[in-house]
Image (cartoon, rainbow, N blue to C red; front, side):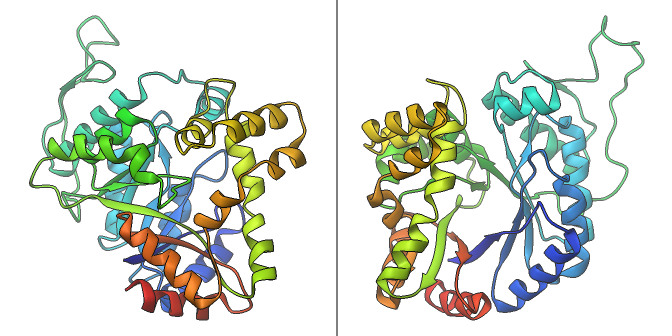
Length: 345
């Protein structure tokens, strides 16, 4: 397994670049930059490309609604060029709160839009004259729309690669199936190594059965906090994940429209998922955090003595993870990364 790590998207990009250079030397293979309602990820990734040498750099994620497909393709080609072929285009639908609240565009047809966007991107990277007539995107605009002056075009530059890898952040059954069919990688969240197959196994298999044989095997990116410590400290660190878990399972979406809550239900935590959501939406955030199942926190972290940490790394490997996402916690995180790198490799 390669090692991956989320990089800071909310602080000073110069600090993020200094951190990334240290992480690269310690053994991190892939650095991800998120884009929410923050600085755009593209600016930071371009800066990181100049400050790193070997680390792959990925967007995790660029929302599919905030850029046209051709602009997404142009951006990916530009980042791949300045990074000398180290860019990964991570895309996803994000959620209606951000898309409709921040970007002011309708949150519609996410799965179909992703498929069309990827098809258009690959045409751009192959320097084809781009035409597309799909349910969501029309290139050029058809007769009767716009000025009527649109013409098919192709990318002026010659991309570093014509096959920039595309990773999709997906959770729902149909979206995961499409991911396994057309993408180079998958970015799931709240990935439970022992339970993931029961939730996504059928979807991954269905997508793989339709996968173009020219595509490489699907990369899977998942993991969690890593720390080597005694049990008392381990319990405290594992409990640190309660805040984000409660936020997403309880607060990201309304009743019946929360992707993360649905995953918890499919994991068999139906009662806890309902309780977390009810408490969080009622403003009782501390109680919602307390309702997060301890079993989930233990299984999705790599925190404890060396034997336990290695056991959890192997659990992720056995679950099909190929790029282990780590968040090191301890006095010397770089030394910890070097040690985990040896075990994961």
